[in-house]
Length: 517
Image (cartoon, rainbow, N blue to C red; front, top):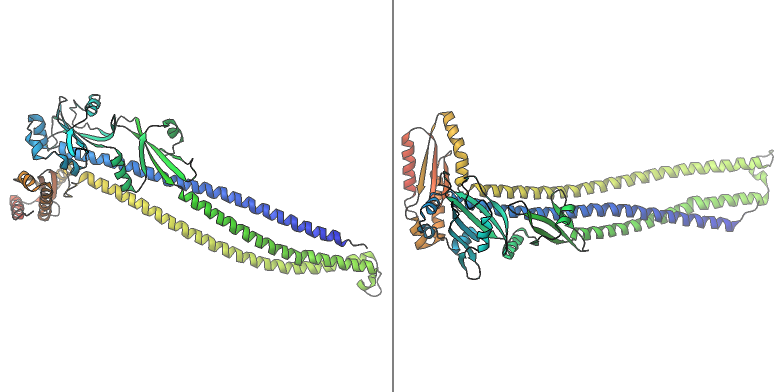
């Protein structure tokens, strides 16, 4: 029997090379599949991150518009404003100090009182360069000519949102001018605005800690066609930058401006670095495992096969079959095959023992995989907690906006809107329970002299002190609200008799003694 040792070595080399090529191909295939899946998920998270920040910007602009609407409501629904429009008493302007300081305190750039006939009784805007107020720009009055606001007689008609002027965009809010109890007829309309200029955008950016840019309309169709469910278009043409766009509509609902946020692609860069690290680890581990497998194959399979062939060669070269047979038996090829089968059965038993050991190794690997799954689950739990925290912060911001809409920004008391919204419910409850209630209308004598003599800051401190003392006097179910200026309303609920009203009145008078500022 002939034996070709060189051919066997060639077979061993081909086997090792083939296994190595197959292992490398499988590693690269798995890596590219994982890379594609991971990068897709990372890009999705990055787009969602940019979209959320664009939505924060839009919500902030809407909040600013609601703030203007609240200010317009406070000033427009007021007896003094109503008399100012009807009688044209110019002392109203002096009493309420409609100057640059008031504009700055209210954080507005424009205020206009328009009569029902369309006449501008008072219309001024801030001039930053001169540090004073000046008559409103002709472009504003020209824009208002094309709106139903100038001759509005509907007490429920309001206009708020974005308008486009030649000198730049502006956020406005209007409110019909009514008496303090909301009665008509409509005497006119109050318009309040704030310029959406670079300073306002910079302030908004600092407030949100975001690089916000607001520009004129560009490729509107591209934004509309590529926008996601929230109306935000995310563009990632630049390698290290990603930009989110959203269209701002004007008061007529027409596209007017584009708000954008450009941010560094930190998530993608971190993801790419992480994938590179994973790839390096996979290659290293795979090469190590491949080397171990090759050693295993060489030691436990190929070398044993070589030994088996050597034994067969020895038997063939000696042609002494008696050593393989029992005494008295024939030395033929069948006996030689029988002996080889016995040797193969011995090797199969050894292979079974090795398989049992491999099974234990696989169990150990499964335990390691379970530990890695637990670690990943812990990481995802941490991410979910962060998302819950962001949602909680957003809900707190919404509650703050709602609170500002129904409470006075200076004293923290319920405002006119809150009081009017709850008055009918309180009256209904009193009727159902057959209990009386009383409403007191209070104002401060000489408050204008305090403002003129000591300044508005002192006047604000006085209003806060009065609000604090009235709150201390109020009972558990009583309501103290500021209607505007120095006017307050005190609602006394659950009255047993008229002496209760007299007692509360005396408490209010006593608490006003000794006011200091």
